[in-house]
Image 1 (tube, rainbow, N blue to C red):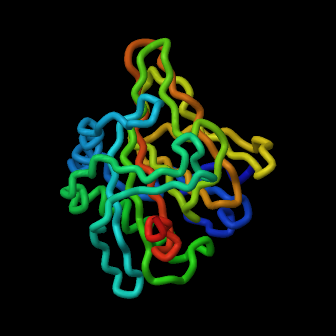
Image 2 (image 1 turned 30 degrees about the vertical axis):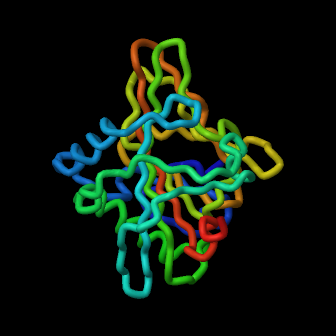
Length: 243
C-alpha cells in the first residue's frame, strides 16, 4: 500500500481516502538537541499503572480548544469516556487517570506538537466545523519484562469514538518486540502493519479503518514503548455530558 510510506508533508486526501496517514518525525520539525524534548520524555517516568490489564503506565490531560479564538485551556472535567463499541474490554466506563503535569503545557516541544496538530485539524475533513473541540492528551508507557507482555485496551481491532487520533511515538527501547500498529478494513481484513521506530514518528487515524497495536514483548530485560495519543472530538459529541 503506497499510503503506508512515511510522508514529511501532511496530505489530507490520503487520510480521507485510506483512513490513515503515516508521518515521519521531520513533519514536526523538532530539534533533537532541544532540552525541552528531554523534559517531555522524562514525563513518562512519572506515570502510574493503569487499572486496566496490560502493564501500561499512563496519565491524561484534557484540553479545550476554541478554533474561533484559538484559545486552548485545561478542562475542568478531566474524566475520560470510551463507549462499549470502542472499548468492550473496559465496558464503556468513565475512567479517571493521573493528570499529566500541567507544566508540560508550557513545554516548547509539546507546544510544537500541539501547534502542528492544530494546523492538521484545521484542514481535516474528519472534524466538523464546530468551534469547540476536546483535545485528549494520553501519555502511555508499555512496560514489559522478558517473557511477559504489555498490551492495549482493547487488545484487538477497533474504531475509536473520536473522529481523529494521532499516535506519536516518543521512545521505543531497542530490546522491544511487537508494538506494531495494524490497519484493517471494517470487515476485519488486515491491510497493513506499521512500525513506529523514531521519536515523533506519527500515525494519524480516522474512523474509516479499524486498528490495533500488537502486544509488546522483550528479548531481554525490561522493554518500553512510550507514546502520546492525541485524540480530537467536537465538544458536543463528548458522551460525558450524557452520563
